[in-house]
Image (tube, rainbow, N blue to C red; front, side):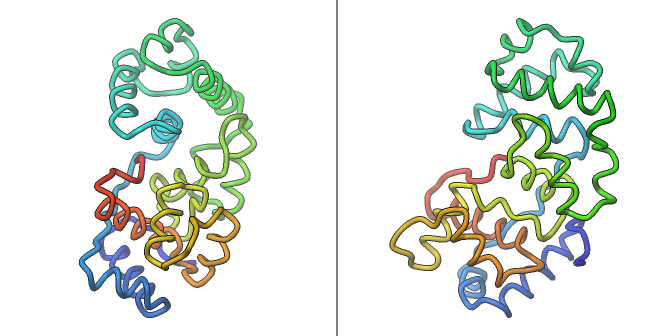
Length: 214
């Protein structure tokens, strides 16, 4: 297993190995595409931030999260469960995200989701635990594994920005779907997470968008 993505040195190692394995990744690096480490705290706070960012722009997610943090102090499952739906909706959370976060907080509080232990489990096992929570899909689980736990091979292949960046970088006629991109990503093991960071950086530069929501 590769070392966790906890330092810039590990990120650079992953980028070097990707460049050796894939000439397209090498070309992106030579063109000046430079991804950032960008870690977020593990645990309920980090996962809740990712849920807040589902299907909204980074600017909107940040505004909602800042309002939520004004009433969620400290950002723990127990404190979240004490907040009313009205308070959560006033912060900007949709009804669906309120349900997801309540389910997440309940599963953590009742021991069904050992969130604090996931960093010591294999990525596949951690992914399985996360997607058992209603409202936590593969994208959310992969982003948590990559940005909060630092698993270098976690790969959010369902991310639209990653898919579009891959289409542009590899000269594909159509944007690859999750399955097609997963097949392409086999070349990048055990650094698929670093490849995703590279593609997000390429997307931001080429499209002048923010790309990754975390």
